[in-house]
Length: 122
Image (cartoon, rainbow, N blue to C red; front, top):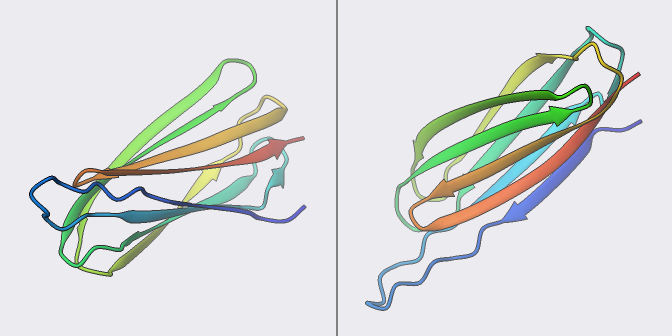
């Protein structure tokens, strides 16, 4: 199988006072997308601040799957105007076979974006 990439663009939040809108994009990649139990896979998230000024963001990740599997983590950071931050984490595949879903929600300065991807443990 191939790596799955999902992109989501945040909706800009316009203020009645005509203040500048803030937006961000988030990309989520999992590689490889099919693994054996105990194998390592890489989850990569990439966030771009598409606004004209610095903004603070929080990315909340959750992983759910068979056998009541659940894992969460969160990271907060600040990005300058038009700046991108990419981070990868090695993740050990759970022991229960099946499909796992990775969901990320990006929030910051009045905008929200999300992306979903999945991997399979054989």
